[in-house]
Amino acid sequence: MFDLALKIALLGASLSMVGFLYRLIKGPSVPDRVVALDAIGINLIAFVALASIVMDTGAYLEAILLLGILSFIGTVAFAKFLEKGEIIEDDRNR
Image 1: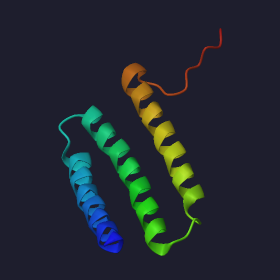
Image 2 (image 1 turned 90 degrees about the vertical axis):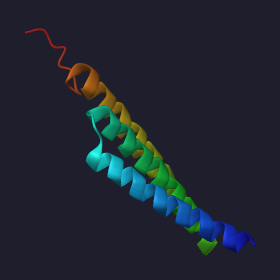
Image 3 (image 1 turned 180 degrees about the horizontal axis):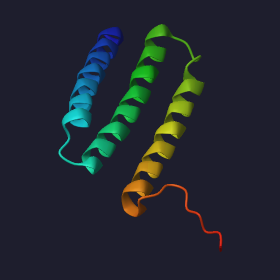
């Protein structure tokens, strides 16, 4: 029963990834695309975690952590770029 639930969860994650890719490509505005990209990162984390459970291994836990960190940093960078137009500010006095 647990194996069936895992396979259904993997199928759901795969289908939601298709929906997020559609929103990433077709999104009406740039913030919609950024949210879709963040959701793809979260969905990828879920997919790797489910695959790790199916394979009964803990080898992918570091990959999950790395994906989470990169997804967070990417979302913050996109949000800062959308707000100010630049990611790295140059505050030096000239």
